[in-house]
Structure formats: structure tokens, C-alpha cells
Length: 256
Ligand code: ADE
Image 1 (cartoon, rainbow, N blue to C red):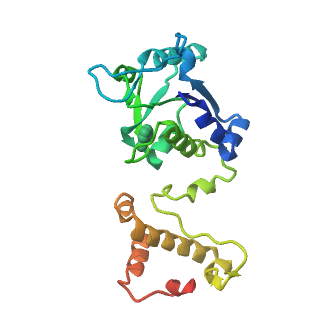
Image 2 (image 1 turned 90 degrees about the horizontal axis):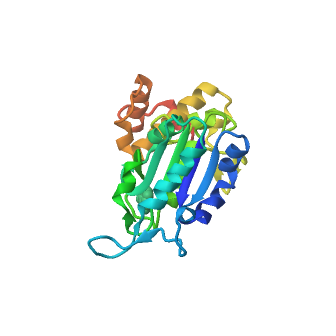
Image 3 (image 1 turned 180 degrees about the vertical axis):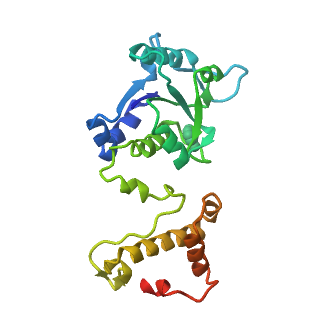
């Protein structure tokens, strides 16, 4: 995959791309990420990328010319001119980002992120935009951090990026549920014990306990998610147990 990030603040995005999974994914050649400074596509002495809004009002508006020229430069450098590019504008007015969108974007060949700043962008830039994405209902100073969130979430879903494929499968949201609790050594720490079932070596019981705890967390914290997924009969049974609609099963006592 190839990713281009158009920004007025390249240093804001470069650091996180040099760490951890994002760094490794690039080293493995699974993704190539370019950061382009919008100002390098301006032609005046002051490298002007923004201007006052027509019609008056506060704030500045990102000018169309440098963005159009940056896109033309990106397109001129790729071999297959016909290949489809997703051009994503980061904006609080976009579609709310979620794991489903991350999965979809992870299958693309080429993504361009436009990070807006100031009051907004000249509406004509949207001629080139295929998707507008928001990472939540709050306003950031610009699209850079939002683009990094989206890039981080999608790059780790590219096959081969994570060591073990199951680490994706177990993620919160991957199955539509929140993740179950995790424990590592020591078995007892400051009086807190690891649930016994996890030490049992009985993989079937462990899987059942994890599923139940994932359902419990989702029910407690994000009941809206339960409406979105198809629950198995076993899931429904576990939920009834969690809600105390049946006498507590042995499995309720296992972790205690
Ligand atoms: N730019 C500013 N706020 C944003 C948000 N919430 N999501 C995406 N881009 C943004």
C-alpha cells in the first residue's frame, strides 16, 4: 500500500510514523508512507497556503492551488495512472471513523490524506476528495492527529504487519465485541489473583470464559454494539447468565 499525507505541519506526523508497528510495517515494505508539505506546492515568496474567506468572517481558508498541484504531483509519480486512489479529507464534518472503515481502507492500494487546518478548506478542493472522515465529535486544531489515528488503525490490519494474525482477531471490535480481560505473570500481585480458569490449561473453558467476559464488558459499557452483531445461541446463553436470568452457572464461579 502507498499512503501520502498532505499537511502544513509535516513534523506533526513524522514522529509517530517512525515508531513501533508503523515503523515496522514500512521497514517490511508493506506500506510506503510519504509526508508532503503543502507549502512546497506554493509559488510566492511567503509560501502562502491560506487566505481570508470570501464574504468575510474570522479565520483563514486553505487555498485550492497547492492542494491541486500536490495531487497532480502524486499522480504524476505513480506507474499505473489508472489505479484508483482514495483521497481522504480529515474533517470533523466527515463520516465517523470506526473499525469497519479501517478494515475497508486496509484493502486499498493507495490512500492520500489531506489534513485541513485553520477555519476550513476551500470547498473546490472537494472536487478531488473521495471520502471525508472524522475521528469523533470534537474539534482538533487540524487533521494531522486524526489522519495518524486512521493510518495507525488501518496499517495494523494489512496482512503481515502484525506478527500473529490472531492478535487482530482478538482485538476489541474485530468480532464486534469489546475485548476480554488479559493477565500475565505473576499469578498473585498485591492480593489480586489471576482468574483460576486461565491457569487450568483447559482451552475450551478458557475460550468460554473469555467470550463471556467480552460479552459482559460489551453489555456493561457498550450495549449498543450488541445490537449490531449476530449472537450465537451460546452467546445468548452466556448473556442470560450474565444478566442473572438463570441460576449462576459453574462458569461464573470459575474466576473467583
Ligand atoms: N480535524 C479537526 N477535527 C477533526 C476530527 N474530529 N476528525 C477529523 N479531522 C479533524
